Amino acid sequence: MNCPNCDCYTPDDSPVCVHCGAQLPEISADPARQSAGISRLSGKRVHAGSGGGFNGWNILMVVAVVLVGVLLFFLLRSTPAHAYITEFPDSPIDLTSMIVSGKTNIVDMYSEFCPPCRAIAPYLEKLAKARPDIHVVRIDINRKGHRGIDWASPIAKQFNLRSIPHFILVDGNGKVLEEGKPAYKKVVDMIKEALNQ
Image (tube, rainbow, N blue to C red; front, side):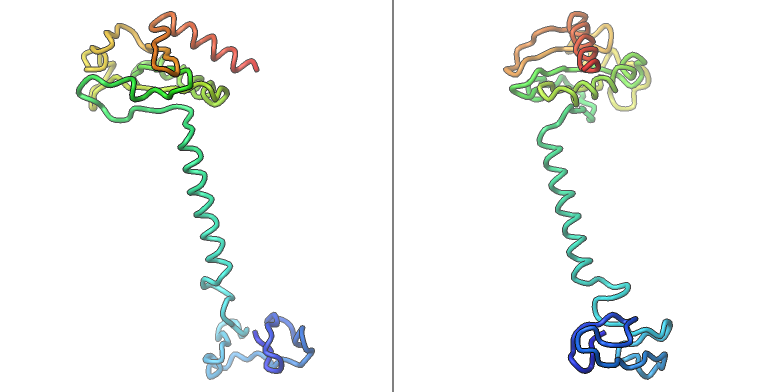
């Protein structure tokens, strides 16, 4: 509350003004004094900026939290460790559009119905986090609604898939370095090396 003598803010629980030392008026639960800013329930003086409403500090904190959240979103989005193809294309895909230049790209063709695919996925994520020079692209070969591994999907046909996970290693310039079993062996070696560091 503000002191009636010097008009400076003084905490509600103080009997005297902390600035001028004047005796503060006693707080009453009189309903007639509600308009003067006194709470009927607690009998304590209520003033702007206290209690349940938003005051300047609350608004400042909300704005700060929102700004930090937006900043983190853009920082994390600008350097993704890996990408997931979440749509279910009904036609072949353009692999070059998913490649990040300047990085070694690991393309993982998988299906959620493939146990080895599910087993290696967390290791790919750890590899991508441990090695900033690596970008992982995970592509679900299944069409939407298909149960089991979708060997007849457009992606499976495009890459002539016979087994999954199927890996393709692509350099930062878009050149395919390895594919299939040789790529799988290199990816496993990269994972082992990253986890042993």
